Length: 93
Image 1 (cartoon, rainbow, N blue to C red):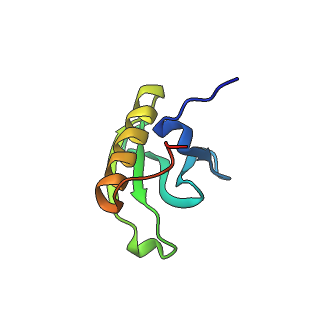
Image 2: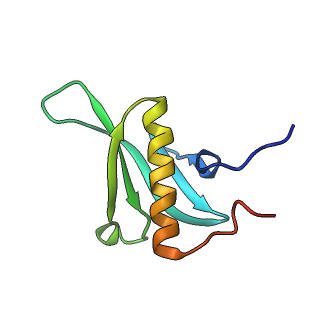
């Protein structure tokens, strides 16, 4: 089966439920995590840049916690990575 490249293909489920790690090849570039909205029973997907020091991570954005929201979070997170780091080779042979 042929697998086509997409920002979603760069996500791997994290150890914790509701967590995904985004990679550019083998480099970890972002963390996406389901977070509760205080005072409600709802939640959002929060995307931050990856840094080994959590205090150095930067917010990318909040997205709806559904299948479309996860795709949107992946696309926006990838676009922010490319904007900051330059062209990637992950989607090239």
